[in-house]
Length: 291
Image (cartoon, rainbow, N blue to C red):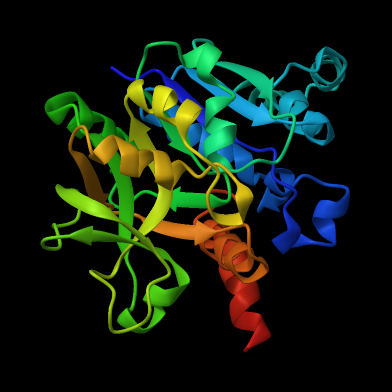
């Protein structure tokens, strides 16, 4: 079973400027907690026990968030604010660890994943892009289903979702023989970056969740620089496809691109109305605005 997940968090977050000039985009709050916590909880819910942050010096606040703050905890205990104390001490279950490795240069997603090679070793692992929040549908964790499928087929899993046909030129689109049902996987022929409308092989876009075999690290080590003069994960996946089957998993849930400002606002709305303590008041506030 897959127990390790890589979260590349070293990016500059240029789509979220000016906020990301001094605040890591992963630490921008969605309702009452940073976006990165939702991604970590998604991984933990899928059975991940080791979170590997691929980071750089400007992102220390992410590491600090998942560390203990004994001064704060002591203060809350003394003031008998036990409900808040429980929230900050329960961010991670005791069996889950968070470690970090540095990406010394911004050389692409493939390079970021490769930076974690010494930690993953010869084990398969998951990759979760922290810009994207995935909200479960009917209590089903898509990453968990991907890991389950990987265990059955031993084939790498790439999460995809359906997008409107007139928007395929904005995404990486997978080439598949047919569209699988939600929660199912199908062998894919490749990934085409932003194909022109009308010539895309499907309308299934890559989401930002991967379950990959250990072999991908060896391939990343020999993958030449591609688009943007960076080492691209999709290029290494293309090399993997020459050796074995790679499958596209069609997700059940809903995604929110928190790397973009509009996607972030959409996430705040969806998570806000579903919040157990604030949801009803938030709904009333939206109605009162009469927009």
